[in-house]
Each structure stands twice: as C-alpha cells, then as structure tokens.
Length: 162
Image (cartoon, rainbow, N blue to C red; front, side):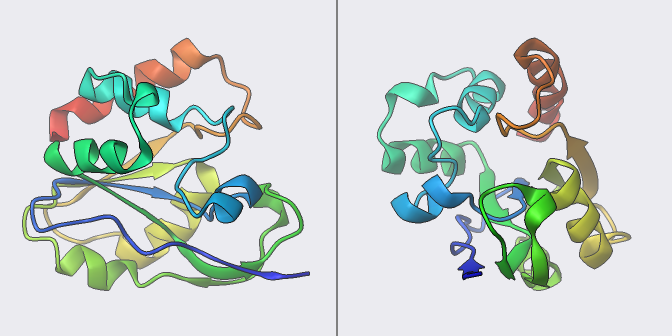
C-alpha cells in the first residue's frame, strides 16, 4: 500500500472556524485539491453555511471565499497507508500537528470535524483547549449516506462561528 499525505492547511490569522477532514481521498489526492470528488458534498454544505454557491466557483475562489468568511481547512492525518478512499481503511497514521496550528490562530473559536474518523483522531490532540469549541459533523463523503438535508441542518450550526 502507498503512503498517502495530507495537503498543507488553508488558514490565515483571521480564521475563526477550522474544518478538519480525515485524509484526502484518491480523487482529491490526484487533483491536489480538497474535496475534489464530484459526489463529495463538502462544497455544497459549506456553501449553505456561507450562503454562497461555492460549486460554481473555481477551486482558488472557493478557498478565498472560505478564508474571507474566517474558515480554514486541514486534515487530522498527516500520513497513513490506505487502500482506496474509505476512512475505515486508514492504517499506520501519523496525525498532523493540530495543537500547534490551533495555537497559531489567534481568532479561532471552533474546530469542526468532518466525520467520525476526523473527530476521533483530532479530539485526542486538541480536546480541552480553552475557548475553542469542538463540533462533530456528519461526513460530507458520499460513503456516509445520511440524507443531504439532514447533513445540511447539522452543518448550518457552523454559522454561529463565522
């Protein structure tokens, strides 16, 4: 199995909400873009949160829109072996240095975990940091089959931090 590596964080000093996934899937890794799989609902969900249609924007414009709204992106896993794209297949992972990033974001008020694996791995590193809410979200992945409207309702809770 090949070692997979996460992307650099998309952050600046104005980030108030940090959204953490687990590890980019095969399509995203090939494209070197966060949430590149066309069936992944991340951009639709964040668009609902920001009240903007992110799906019609270029990738760079999407990232810029997130940062303008005070939203950053990263993953909880720095490297891992994984066959395919499913979180359940992640093996021998090394976590990203989340505590260091969180400490470097002076405006940070909340960290949202995109899915159960992200929450499980990420909480271990940053639980108990004063003044930062930790929010578990249903995964935006097409493999997590909760209806979109139910996912959307939970993701809309993020509006209180932007």
